[in-house]
Length: 217
Image 1 (cartoon, helix red, strand yellow):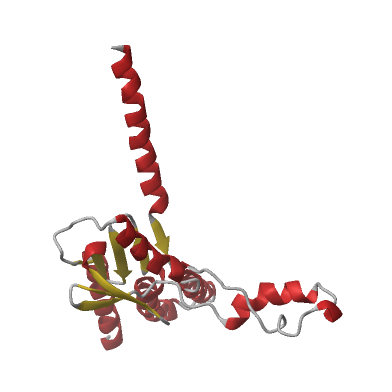
Image 2: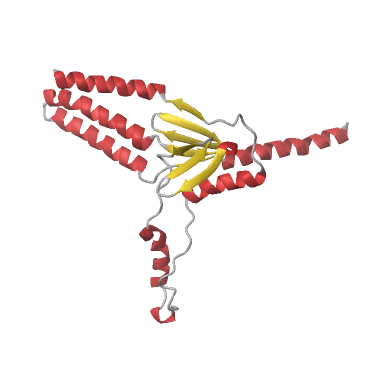
């Protein structure tokens, strides 16, 4: 009995470690500018409403409200919500009003250019919220700072022009698929699942109708 109990502990430990590895590997990638842009627009919209209300412009508040709400909804859909999630089984592309669940075994290719595109099950799915490529200034800033801290006379002639390789979230997205292929792809039903964000669609329709009514009155 003691021996059997002792054998159960490693299995439980392995299972717990497997769960921890899975939790660590799940990651969400976002554009560096998406949420700051959305927050800035929302702050400007709220500030405009408060300024008009403080000025006693009640009619102006009522006229501006539907348009500002429409802009805020659009910014949420286009900037705040989009992202690309990676877990042990595949990708989830969150694109505004639609989400695409792409298992690794359906992926045919990944294009990492200005936008990240996943080719799967004969179609191409572009992520709205994946990280954008780093600029040359961003990638070389730290290297240039290091060079400036050294005496100019000791620099090799070619060192001033070289830049280190920068690993970004975009690299991790492609690497996740490569790692999954090496480890062995888990079987799925072989299809990409697309779902619509119903609540946000309803909100958008209501706000759009509000804008139309406000414009006609």
